[in-house]
Image (cartoon, rainbow, N blue to C red; front, top):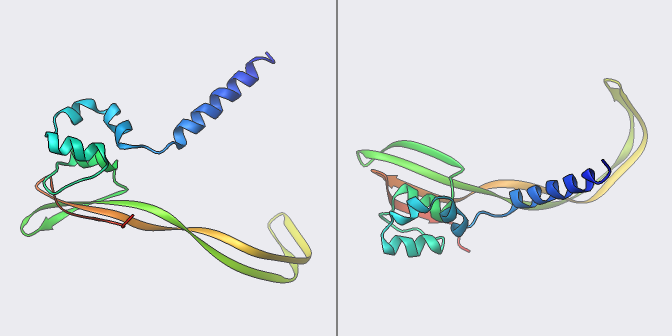
Length: 147
């Protein structure tokens, strides 16, 4: 029984490490080789490098950039439009200084005494990293944050 726990720990650590690994175009291609094979040679080269171009189908964009964070649909120029947004987050560091005396309680928790906190605080702020507009299922326009 004692030998089982280290083995379970190793497996859990390995699963956690794999789940945190970034998904690259080559990983996405390995998961969907049939979709990759249907692409033109030009689009295969772009997808392999994680790039997209005007005229690409949604499947090619999904292989190159991954699944979108948000999807919006509607009409644009009288044609069916889909917009894929890719989101990320940026750390924002602030310095706060707080000090004071407090007494009170919240529910079963009670506190009293003098407290202080200071130093940097990191907050992650979401932002739109990239957007792709599709008309009739093909890339019409795209934009992304400059690298």
